[in-house]
Image (cartoon, rainbow, N blue to C red; front, side, top):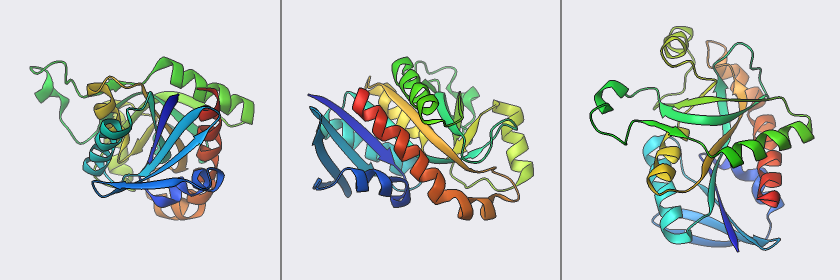
Length: 225
């Protein structure tokens, strides 16, 4: 039986997934509530990690240790970082990294280079489903840090340094953990704001729409994996 793990940072990012996967068994392990369903010969586990990289890494490791997933999907919303990407578009990670960590200091300590590649098969699955559902999608770098980006100057500094497609607070940590455990990983993020001075207003308006859209993609991914 294939086992798929889904990690979201906030309850709002998982509400539509949990509506679709009813009557889950809930196991509380190390402070995290894991919602467990069996569907179509697969075991599907979804869990809310909490916000930011430490919570996400802890949650991913507990998930991997206890459920041995064949794949991990980090699902949720993110800020757009490329001018071609609009609110409610989807960004599928090809790689993830922290934007608030100076990667120069990791050069002497391979293989923990700080840039973690997503699984090609999971990327293809996400993009094909987006196309099927009529969702505009992009494959690109997602960066993570310990702050909600809502300032043009901060956004532009990150863009100029790392050239990301989206920014969030968890993807790099989940990808790091999956990499060390040799578990296929992808982050699927729907854009809820433009990570700029208008970000707070945009986020409030589009959070639920974006979360529902990413849930639709992730739920169909689970069916075909």
